[in-house]
Structures are given as structure tokens and as C-alpha cells.
Image 1 (cartoon, helix red, strand yellow):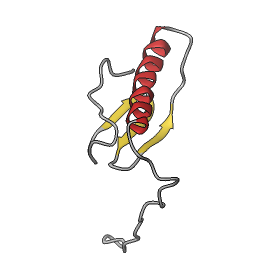
Image 2: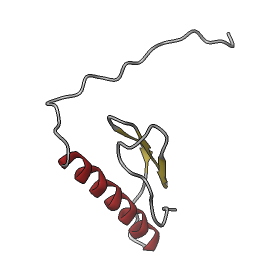
Image 3: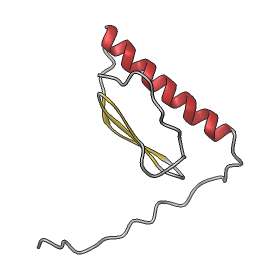
Length: 86
């Protein structure tokens, strides 16, 4: 099921998450991470989910177009830590 209206503001914080079906959009200051999957079915539920995704991607495009963007961001700095439960 899709959320009706989203207050998701792309690149605004490190906390917002939008769930549409099995797809998750995670907000970051320098990127939006999409993970999971969704079936956009040919029914009212599929249309509702597609509208939410369309709104989200429209906001992402507008936010990116309104910035002075570098050619490419460096990859995220991912650190490995020892498992505290092992």
C-alpha cells in the first residue's frame, strides 16, 4: 500500500524514510537510497503506488536541478566494525 501524501524532502536530513509497497526510499544529505522491490499492478493500488513514486522522483529531480552539482560524488565512507555479539 502506498502512503497518501509525503512530507519527504529529498536531501533534507538523515532520518526520513518513505515506504511504498516493498520499496524503501531513505533520505540522506547527499543521496537518496532506494532499496527493495515493488509491483506496479494494473489496478487502483498500483496507480496509487505509481503516483507516490512519481511525486517522490519529481521532488528528487527538482532538488537536484536546483543545486550546483559536482560531476560525481565519492562513494560513501563505509566502515566495518567487529560484531559485538560474536
